[in-house]
Image 1: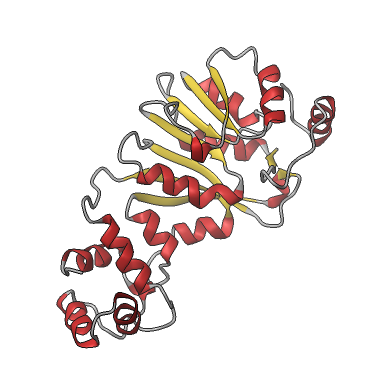
Image 2 (image 1 turned 180 degrees about the horizontal axis):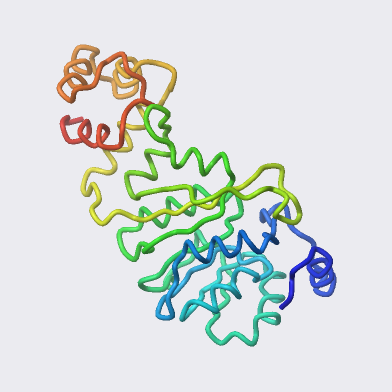
Length: 273
């Protein structure tokens, strides 16, 4: 399937009576160098299985199928599924599933990587769902996301945020490269980023529920001091919160953005609430 130009893409879509859907966040990556960067970052070998979310036109799907043993492509749009089944019919190692990835059950492969040009609205839900899975977490996630979202996910002290903490408690994250919005068709309003997420082997189990309760309390009003946010949201006295923070070498006047994931874990382990 040669989709090396916008003209050929439009021709294919016209043939199948399909228009790119804003509802499904369909912005197709058409830049070959960016596709190669994604494939290189995934570091696939012939024995691996890949789960692709939102394959769209199937351009990335083809590249994945050339490198991996098996590709499971999950697409929600029934029109896209019908087109993909025709255009990818010569690839025997591609399985196309019509489903909402957030509702996919019993079809997630074992020992797999996720590689995807994610519809931007799905970024946080997909990352959270697969990282929080107690079983069968992906070995790695290579994702194309909005540039700003990628930067937020990969934030470091002293500019941490709730999203960064929520992802980094589960995984090591890094930005691999940026992609211009001109590399997509239809062109989105913002640039994108390729991010690499590698799940940690050891998780804070049990204790994650308490961890997130405390973190969300700390970030409830990000510009305010920790002592104010934690005492108000957790309904604890200021004196108790002050003692709790100082016990963990954290100043009550600090803001949530200045704490590392390790700081939040220490706070979680050192209090009963």
